[in-house]
Amino acid sequence: MSRSMSPRHKPAPKQRSLAQQAPIFAALGDEVRLKLVAALCVGGAMSITQLTVGTDITRQAVTKHLGVLAAAGLVRDVKLGRERLWEFEPAQLDEARRSLEQIGAQWDRALARLKLAVEG
Amino acid sequence: MSRSMSPRHKPAPKQRSLAQQAPIFAALGDEVRLKLVAALCVGGAMSITQLTVGTDITRQAVTKHLGVLAAAGLVRDVKLGRERLWEFEPAQLDEARRSLEQIGAQWDRALARLKLAVEG
DNA sequence: TTCATATGCAACCTCTTGGCTGCATATTAG
DNA sequence: CTAATATGCAGCCAAGAGGTTGCATATGAA
Image (tube, rainbow over all chains, first blue to last red; front, side):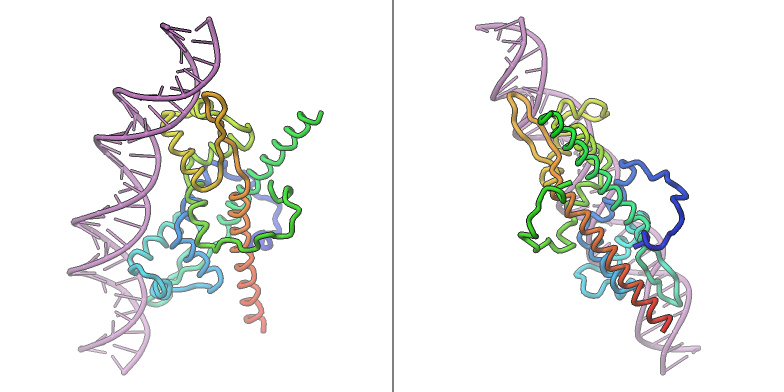
């Protein structure tokens, strides 16, 4: 994903603190929204009406979910004629992934320390 | 994390479908819970009382959050005397991370297809 | 222009969340 | 045994989330 897009060397190494990532996970923490993200990710930009097809909820409900995803920076909208196309925005998802990896790394270190303490 | 623990070759390649991962993200989608996970991850097993220290909410609220994390399989509890120790459980977090990478990979493929189509 | 399509907005509803207080129970310390 | 510590359980509350319906508005098509 965007890890292959930005050759710059961490212009802002100031990654948001772990706790501040909660909203991103919260946005992903809903089955409907997760499906929307997946759909946009593989299908490219789509209109609200298109995204509503195949769902058992109303267009307005979908709109609300897209709003939540947009607030978390996971999707972006572009007006095109009378319709509004939504597209996936990989940056925040990358950051979320890095957060999980960071937690995992800390856990690995903790395990290593424990192992050393036991064996040592 | 656990990726370094299981040398087996995918005994259950049946990773839960993306949509089914929503509960895990939802569990991580709260600042308090994210901090709890981080604390358990770096600090090892801790009791409810210990986890409550440094928080501005009550012990009962912390208990509820731990319950949510446990339901998502992100933490596990062990009774020890009159206290109940909670510890981080990396498996589900690994799966969540894989899900994000999967989405990212799909996005990368979609981008590649688009690029090909545009460049001819 | 006129009709149909794609959305936007707002009000309203119900269920869930996140927190709190109070009281009961189990264990360990003296 | 008795007191202090660590939790569990239940009930109560306010705010927020997820959905719906109804009606207004902007645009493309005929």
